[in-house]
Length: 158
Image (tube, rainbow, N blue to C red; front, side, top):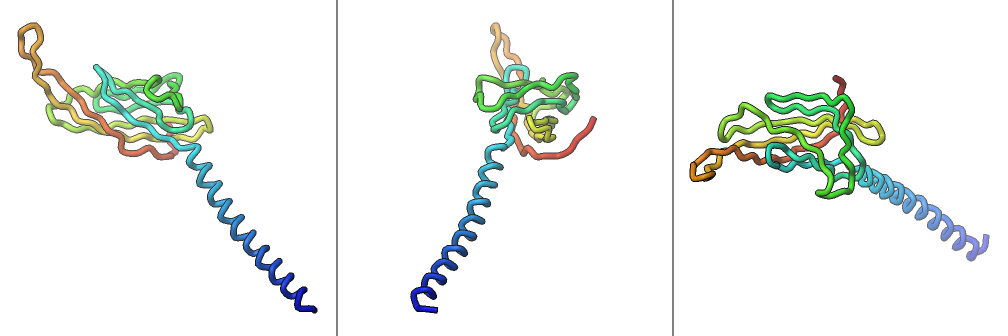
């Protein structure tokens, strides 16, 4: 073999190995991007007499059931939580009942996505009391704060 042929063969080997390494990295990047596209994320916001449920993920979700202190509800037909709508589209669940001032609570939402994957969203909150003057009378009114813990994929059945 001539010197030129050895260099050429060595260069081809280096190019071939580099292509394999770069290809493996590209597959890893593509898989990560695919997972980011299908992200499921839910957050809750207190509202007057209810808790707003917002879908901030990238896929449509369907609410099948919620469990709150004092209230458990299975929907006969699941409720749509559309993706990518910001604050313009949300669903709601009622506030928990029977709580004392300063008491914290947890609640769960049972969801599915467009791909029939099952999800559970765990959230929490706290009830407090606020004193307000209404029609010249001082009244104590409940106020709520809520937060989201996590949303995870888990097979559930009712």
